Image (spheres, helix red, strand yellow):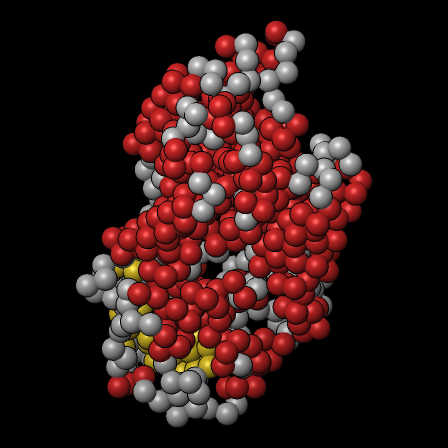
Length: 539
C-alpha cells in the first residue's frame, strides 16, 4: 500500500544524501516482503504461546451471533447474548470458520498472523511520514513500540474485532497522508476502508472523525472531504448496510439496540445504552488518563494493564508545540499536522464517547510512528536543520532507547485464554441430549448454545441493559414456545457459584425442580462450570 502511497518518492531521493542509510532500506521490494513475513510470523507465534482465546465477548456473542446467522436462529431464540445479540456479526465470520474448520491451534494462529499485519502498516506509515529520513532505527523503533501495545498484544489471535478493523483504519490513514491534497482517488479509497471499519464496528466512528479532521488540513480540503465522505458512505453501507436494513425492518432501529431513545424500537425501553464506567470525571481527569496508564491505573479497562506510550507521546507533543511557539519556528510539515489532527481528534472523540481501552487499539498502534516522528522533528529543530543527516546518531539512539523502555514497561491486559494442551471441547451430559428450552439467567452463556441439540431454543431473561419487554415479540416468542413443549423439557442455565435468579422464571410460570439434580457443563474458563437446572411448572 505504501509504495502506492509514495514510498517510491523516498527511493528517488538523491543517492549522495542517502549514503548514510542502511543499504537494505534502499530496496523497494525486499524490506516490505521481509517485514510482511515477519509480521505474519510474529502474530502466529504469539498466538501459539498465548493460548486459546476464550474472552468474555466470545462467550457471550462473538460465537453465538455467527452461529445464529448460519443456522437461522434469529427467528427462534430470544436474545441469548442479551443486547449484544443484535450487534453486526459480519466481522466475526472469519474467526468462526477458522476456529471450527481447522484443528487447534491452526485456525487462531492464522487470525493471529492477520492481526500481525498491523506492524507492516506501521512500517508503511513511518515511510510516508519521514520519507527519506526513515532510517532502519526509526522503522525498528516504531515496529517495536507498535508490537508491544498492551491491548494490541491482548487481542492478537482472539475474536475481538478492534485489532482486525485496525487494519483498514490505519490503511486509510496512510492513504490520506500520502494523497498530498491532489489525488482524490486516494481519499475515496481511504473513505472506503475507514467506512468499512465503521460498518463492521460502530465504535470506529471516532477514527472517521479523525480522518475528516486530517483532510481539512490539505491544500484542497473541500474536494478531499467530499471524496472521503463518498468513500466512507459506500464502505459503511457495504459492510453494515444489510444488517442495518434488517434491524430497521425487524426492530424499527437500524443500529438496535443503540440510541433507542432516538429510534424508539418497541422492543426496548426508549433509552440510549451507554457504558459510563470508564469515562473521565472532568477535564483534568481526562488529561491525566495517559499518566494513569503509565503507572498501571486501568480505569479505562476491565482488567489491569500498564502502558507508557501515550504518556511519552503526550510529553513529546507538548514539548514540540511549546518549542515551536516559544521560538516562533515551524517544526511540523503539513503532512505532520494532518497526522496530528487524525490522532488528536480521534483520541478526543474516543475519550468523550467511550474511554474503553480496547476501542483505542488504532491509537495505540499510531503512538509508535507518532513518537518516532516527534523525536525526529524535535532533534532536527534543535540542530537547526531538517536534513536526514542532522544529528542522525542522537536521533536513532533516542528512538531505539525509548522504544526498548516502552516495550519493557508494557504489561498486556488478559482477556482469558486456555493452554493449547487443554482446548475447550466439553462433553455434554446424556441428560441434555434431547431438544429442550434453555432459560439463560446469567451472562455470558450463549456460547454453549451450539453445543446443545440444534432443535433446542434459548431465551435470555436476565439482561439488565435489555430486559424483555412485556408483550413484545421476544416475550410472545417465549410464551408461544412453552405451549408446545420439547422432549427435553426446560432448563435454567447459570454460572456455578452465582445464585439462580428464580424470580425471573415466575413470569413464565416456571420454577427450579428441586427434586431433580442440576447437570454440569464445563465452562470455557479453566476451573468454571455452568449448571443446567431442570425446571417445572409452578403450581
